[in-house]
Length: 242
Image (cartoon, rainbow, N blue to C red; front, top):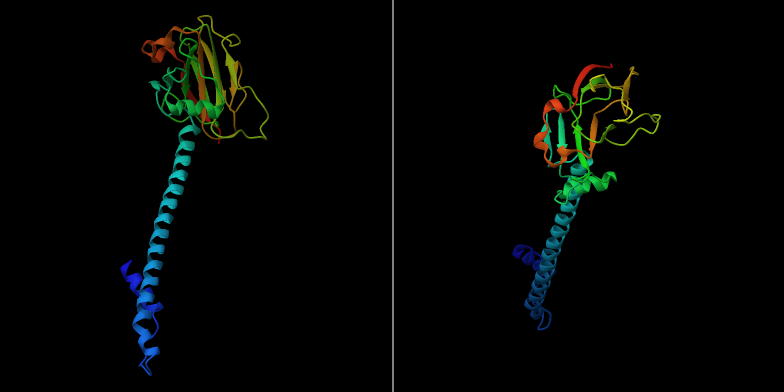
């Protein structure tokens, strides 16, 4: 800033002239000093202004990045605390007092009341048994059993806003209305085309989808270690619509 001050001082200082008389020529050195003082003041003002501008820019950038990261972290499912069980993921702590802030933010954004540890447990799936992302254009076969529970629900949802032009359709099954085999096992078909038996239509025309299995009044809520892959339905992709 010293160079800026000297430059402004020279600009403010009057041009030196040959003294023509006793009056005007004597004012040159005083005018140069005044110009340098004014230039230094202007330089200090510009320096302070640039610092304030940098602070405001940093605050604005931090706010934008913070809001964007918060939106990304709470837009999908729970980012932390899941226990993987094959294609499924159990969330034993999302409704407990020890739930992390991100889980609470996701619940608040969805407007959902999570299951407490004594009430049940949530288990979700975003991929099939082969590790491929569940797609609304594909047909899947869910077969097997569920962990012991007084009741359960299985729902399907898409990621993002719902298509307003799509007519409302079934979004899930309950344990009391499902059709079962004689041994208690069941088969649920998930896909865009109508299937006989237990059919769960895709919630959207295309894009990723997510399955949510909610177990109510289940002993496994207290210990996810008692869950294994055979205690949850298998998810098999049968084909995709082109």
